[in-house]
Each structure stands twice: as structure tokens, then as C-alpha cells.
Image 1 (cartoon, helix red, strand yellow):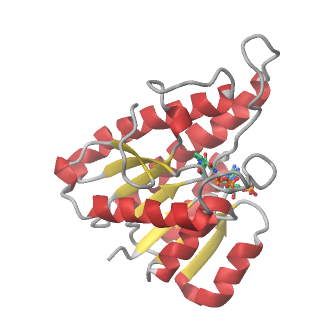
Image 2 (tube, helix red, strand yellow):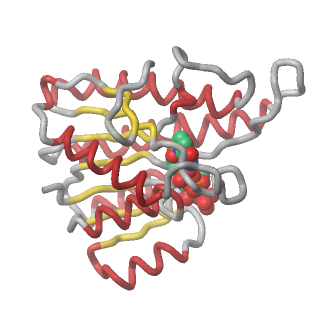
Image 3 (cartoon, helix red, strand yellow):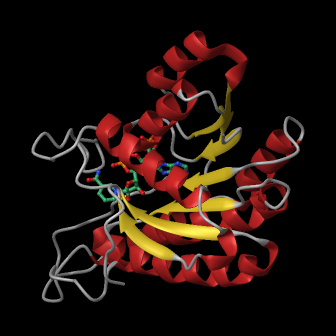
Length: 240
Ligand SMILES: NC(=O)c1ccc[n+]([C@@H]2O[C@H](COP(=O)([O-])OP(=O)(O)OC[C@H]3O[C@@H](n4cnc5c(N)ncnc54)[C@H](OP(=O)(O)O)[C@@H]3O)[C@@H](O)[C@H]2O)c1
């Protein structure tokens, strides 16, 4: 049984649903909160000390370091780190339009560097656990092999960087028994596009349930035999 996990961007959407799912399964959850979250407040009332909520801006080195000190003072190990926090940025402009480079840097800082900051900072706690697993919530949009869009520059490029980063970290942690999974959560009804995406196929709860199964199935396998895998919420392989 996974005892302790940490999830970023837990305010709402997939992150909040993952928090609820892992609490329900009996794990101790550290939930990184970026803004006010009624959802996390409700879970706190229900689960009490099983849930530890802390402020976290993955775009800030200072915030990530402070979060590490706070978490480290409450647990001596972390079985699973789920890097879920991300932003979308502008998605309409093509190579023929004006591209917003400053905003792209912000998206890259949150999505790609944010998960790297978290993984590197929390590695000491992860390596104290049996599972030693990082799950990076990426996207099908990060696949270079299957790229079909002609826009979404910031998001797609940042998720492709998350994919590469995941392989690098996996290679770096493998000798110590660590592993990294890259997971596409499906098309989920969240507010990532600024309003609820009602057309999406999955509820956050359905996506979180699938992601959780994929992670548990990986934990059940021998770490030394595992490659860094890029899969969806049902465990189906995606092309890099
Ligand atoms: N929804 C989909 O169809 C879909 C598809 C493929 C991949 N994904 C991926 O799934 C993950 C979850 O997305 P979602 O759909 O659940 O979107 P979401 O509801 O917008 O959730 C993203 C979370 O990250 C938080 N966040 C934003 N900036 C942050 C920062 N600097 N530091 C820490 N947290 C920050 C957000 O906080 P605020 O709410 O306060 O801004 C929010 O709680 C993301 O990695 C996304 O790329 C989603």
C-alpha cells in the first residue's frame, strides 16, 4: 500500500480529484495549493490529519524549497510524487500570427521547469521510500510523433519538454531504484481553458481513478525492469 504521496496543483480539476482518490484509498496526502480552493477545504474537513495542504507555486524556486522544508518536517519519506500543476497559455495563434513569447516563458516555467524543480527538490524524500515513483502528468499534446496541431505552441512545447525531462530523471534515478511515469490524463472536464470544458470525455474523478490504477500497477512491478513509459489514464502507450 502506498503510504504517502504529494500532488501539485491540487486546487481543482485532476489534481483535486487525485487528492480525493488517494485519501479515499487510505494514503496520507500532501496537497500543493496554488490558490483558494473550496474543494481542498471540504476534503480537509472530511479527512483531517490524513490530508496536509500547503501553499505551492511550482514556478518559484523559493516556494518549492519552502514546501520541501514544510513537508520534510512532517514525513521522512514520500512514496509517490505526482507533478500535475500546469497552465495552458494562448492556444489560437499559428506561425502566421503574432506569438506571445513572454507568456510562453511563463507556461514553460510552470509546466516544464515546475515539475523539474519539484522532482529534483523532493528526490531525497522519494529515495527514502519503497516505491520511489514520480508521475508526471503530461498530455498527448506533448507527443512529437503524433503532433497534429498547428498552434498551442507554449503548451505543446512545454509538454514535450516534460516528456524529455521525465526520461532524463528516470535514467538518473534508476540506479537507486527510482522510476518516472509520463501520463496523459485523457480529455477531462476541467477549467484549464478558462471555463468548464463540458465537451470533454472524462470527469476529473474518472481520470484520477485511471491514473491511480496506472500508478499502482507500476508500483507493483520490479523497478529495475521498468523503462520510462508514456501512457494514458488507461495504461495505453503513446508515441513519444
Ligand atoms: N483537462 C484536460 O483535458 C487535460 C488534457 C491533457 C493533459 N492535462 C493535464 O492535466 C493536468 C491537470 O490539468 P487540469 O485539466 O486539471 O487543469 P486545471 O483544473 O487548470 O488544474 C491545474 C492546476 O494547477 C494549478 N496551478 C496553476 N499554476 C500553478 C503554479 N504555478 N503552481 C502550482 N499550481 C499551479 C491550478 O491552480 P489554479 O486553478 O488556481 O490556477 C490548478 O489547480 C495538467 O498537467 C494538464 O496539462 C489536462
